[in-house]
Figure 1: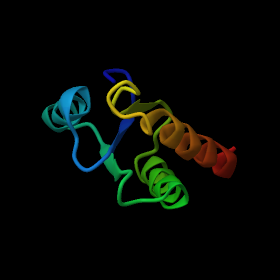
Figure 2: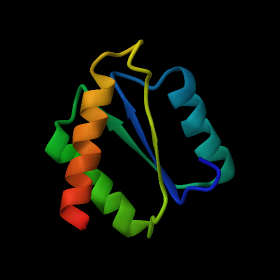
Figure 3: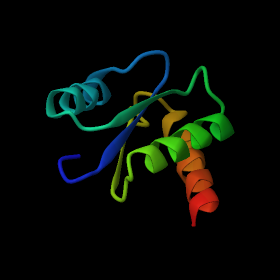
Figure 4: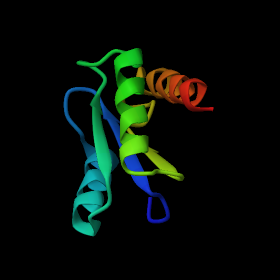
Amino acid sequence: MIDSDGTVAIYFGYPTGGTEQTVGFCITERKPYVLIDAEEMGVEQAAKKVGRFIGEHSVVTLNVAGPRASGEPRAYEYAKKVILSVLQRHL
C-alpha cells in the first residue's frame, strides 16, 4: 500500500476492518483510491472503473484491498475476476 501508486478498495455494502483502514490511509496520505461496491457493481463494470482509475492516475503499482475470504466468501472470486478483466483489457 505504501509503495503503490493507487488502491482499489473492494467491499460488499460498505468498507469494514482492514479495507476501511486502507481507505483511511489513502485519504491521510493523499494517495489515489477507487471504491468498488461489489454488491452494486458487476465484474465488467468494476473492471472498466478500475481501468479508468489506472489511466487517470498513471498507476503502475496497484494495491487491491478488500475483505478476507473468511469474512466474505464472495470476495476472492469477485476480486480475481475484476483484476483478470483489467489485465486482459490493458495488456
